[in-house]
Length: 282
Image (tube, rainbow, N blue to C red):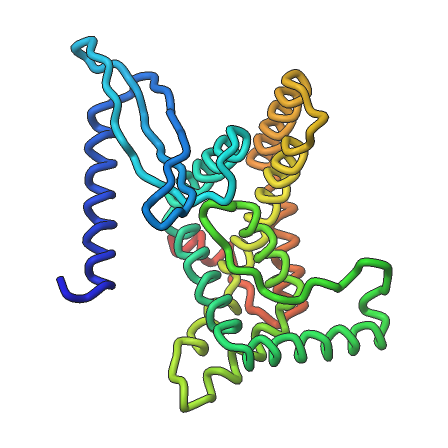
């Protein structure tokens, strides 16, 4: 109990069990979500989340779910934060997706944990860009290739995951190089070598490409809903459009996704498993 890390793990385990008990109590009933601003003693803005439902006995029940830090406490900002938290919760239901984003966080932290590593990453990326521009592999244009740092993703800002994955994809060679250099630095032993092995796997590339497609669709909706000239009718049509695009992606998106992932792997010398042999083995 004297270790801060263990204290946080215990608190997290308690939160998971309590949430599980609340879900079991609710069953499959309809419920509403209440959110409100809740500033703590350090004057840090937070959002409190409560669920309200009617029990099997006909009693009105309210259960507190948790608190999340927010930068703005307007009703629009709280609603946006809640929607983004729902996307996070859904993705966490799949263990492979959860592992993927854990690896993404480790990759960002490892390559950007110090000014030296950040400078090294930027230098490698600039050198790679110049080489591609000189060879004609990449075209120039106003506003292109300007953002080159890896942004840390945050659960309360789901759009940050989209930005992070975009930059990992565009800075792929540089990230791999920096992780290799960090691994060889005996002064700072870390898991950089293991992260390179994970990145250079077909499964990592496939999930990255899939999440980029999904997040691109949801990010467009998020940006459009933040416009001040939107009305309820337009917002509902946007939601329906995004839902349709996601359904189409689920029903007809596998082949294009698979081909795009294979193309990326071939361009970066990443081995592609033989799916026919895998199917016969299973």
